[in-house]
Length: 439
Image 1: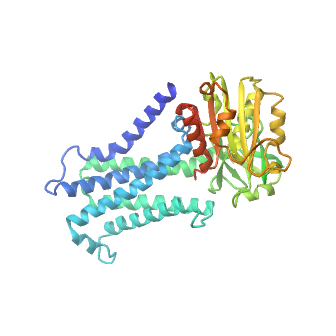
Image 2: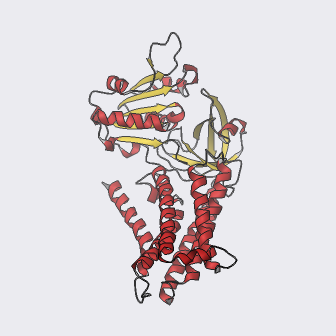
Image 3: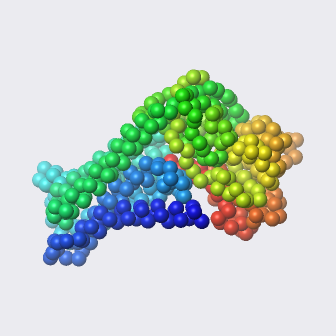
């Protein structure tokens, strides 16, 4: 109940912050005689800028504001809102064009007022911002380079859009309205400063040191860190954080990874990382004693939110088992004997990450472990193929509705399992999943 109220509260705060700037323009004297469609197009422009400014708030990763939703959901929300901003901006221009086609005469920057050029430039940068984000992998843009480009495009587009509104002067000529919009602009700029300067400084004050780099099965590596000069950060089992390795936190070289260690031992945390991209392939080259930085833990993919559950069912594919290992390790440290089921899908037996650790955990927990192999060895007697609806019917407990379900793996796998659990009558509120590729 508290989580629901918290979510409603933060939604109301967000709605207030995006609606207040454009709505305040209606207070006091307003320009007259321009017509409905002209005024409507102006409203779309102001509303678009307001949402654009609040995009910086969504990426600030304020822990308490993110907690009711999960940062992965917020990042997806951020992505879709960017498309909405682009659509609103296009409609803003289209309506003006249909109302007055001479507006095209102002496209040429050699003849157009500076503020019109600023507006067109902001729109072009917005198109580049969204296209390079939605199709980053198809365009083969490395993650680190994309982040720098993304920040540059977002900040520049915002400042140009704000300059466009200031130059046009429509609706904000009144002293009070100009003061209000300037205050909001300063707030949005503060968010940028907080994200890019203050937050990295806070991370810089609490560094970590690499104490172990261990090779695992399945082309994965476990990175163990210990806090250097501080007590470490509290986190919940199953959560993740942004890791900066071999760089200062100001270098924009951070990457999100799930904790794979017990939440009851913050004095030594581990991340198990599979070689999938440019950065993850360099984990094996990390040297002991190298410095690292961690942002605040994030995510609602955790058993700690369901202390009264009679048991848990975990379903993972490949390296998606990392946050589940954190939950299992924590349950073992707490001597928890609730019923647990872990259905773990992999391609090959020799590539099953955490294989030995899971066998050890079976001696400490009331854990039923089921391996599912897509390409099993000849003498394999366990489950084969994919994690299907038939397999779930056969393996999940008879009192299935009394358990909480945690799913982590590739998107297609996760979607299929969610659908299957729904068909089995598991309430939607008891199915929890990690968005495996949110960036």
